Image (spheres, rainbow, N blue to C red):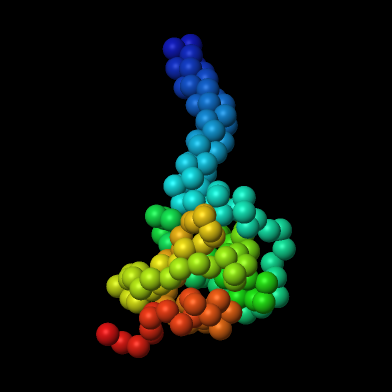
Length: 161
């Protein structure tokens, strides 16, 4: 190998090393940036401050559920536990969030809506409102027996239109 080729290979390796070092510091900063704005846009941070939990409660476990928290869709990323203590939600996937446990008495209002072209319930959490969840009607029906009486009796039906 002549000197010119050797210098070119050395320069190429130096550029690759510089890119590697730069990415080592840049990627964590970018991930933290998006995690913060992602949680703020959904209201998940507010829900997490109020309802954050470290332990999964006893109850019916439903994996790979879909819902909308605030304005962000979590499609097949949610583990739900319906238990006596409340509704437990844990986000999996590429940007996991802190799990939350919302007591049943903090479910304040529910209105009919649509999610993925199916019937759903838009539920307000907390008073004053800390956030909203849009739940598929099948999930809402499974929760109905735990909800406060005024929510369970609202005109949200799983019967076909």
